[in-house]
Amino acid sequence: MRDAMFPATSSLVEQVLVNYDLQPPMSCELLAQRATDLYVIRAGERQFVVSISAPTTRSHEEWEAQAQIQVTLEQQNIPVTAPVQRKDGAYTQAIPVLEGVRYALLTPWIAGTPAGASLTEDQASVYGATVAQMHQCLDHHGSIYQRRQMNLEALLDEPLVWMAPLLEQFPVFSRFLADLVSRLKANVNERDLPLTPPSYGICHGDLHRNNVLFDEQGNLTIIDWEYVSYGWRAYELAALRRSLEAAVHTDGASAHHVNRVYEAYLRGYSEVRPLSQAERTALPSFMVIRHIWIQGKKIDQALRRGWGTPIFTEASVDEMMSTLQGWVKQYGILDK
Image (tube, rainbow, N blue to C red):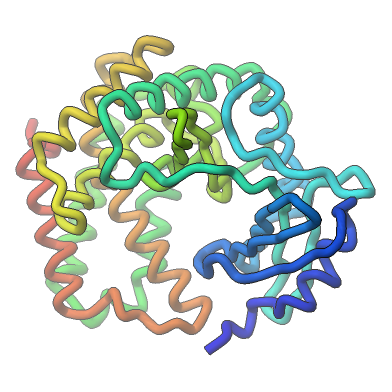
């Protein structure tokens, strides 16, 4: 069933594409429907992707600032997806819908394949170095962007709020999660991580294994900029670890391979911007925090969009609890 908030193709063309200098003939088809809906656009001999956000309270100025970050990074030769400018000079377009406002952004089609579970050590090293270069570039352009802080409140308290309507059904898990969140906060706070660059600053916000594309020549491009925010760079780096750990269970990747790939990623990053000891020791905690945030976000999106909550069954809750307990034990996250 089509999501009520999902614009029909004809409406998309009418509302969005007419505002760009694109060559006919034009066609539009759905690529993916998720937190951000994606369409493939064919215009003349070129291809593009239109991303349309879920209804949001973020202002048009915030979306424009995010687009400008992507443009700035591209101008600094950081391999990212940069948006196409509209005829009026702006990059984003507001689309009023019943539930609020959605925002559309047009970017060129990027050739390449998501790294996924097949990410190699060499690719991971290049990926890490590129992320470090991106962070350095963003530290010199921080004044152009104003957006939320992905602090512990946003990373841990908000997911509990998102899960609240369903946690009542699972009291054992609810108590476990509340206790774990409290202990994770204390664990991170004890490290006294700076709230200033280079440890803290503008982050991509979603650097997992599928948000980097590699082409046949080995060139990479960082994609999917919906979660840009201020945050700890150690949390940013933990996103890949969490997604690689998930690959052990979903794609059959070996734990040994995951460790080697992730170490290559950190090594590549550190060759450009060395990590402090406090940042390194915080990585396992941030991996668990990342997992909690993702599960909460999935539930929030499912409830908002009327998709139901198939991921929040008794079996999935048991699996999530087991996963969190396993990581806490494996990495000694809460050991004193």
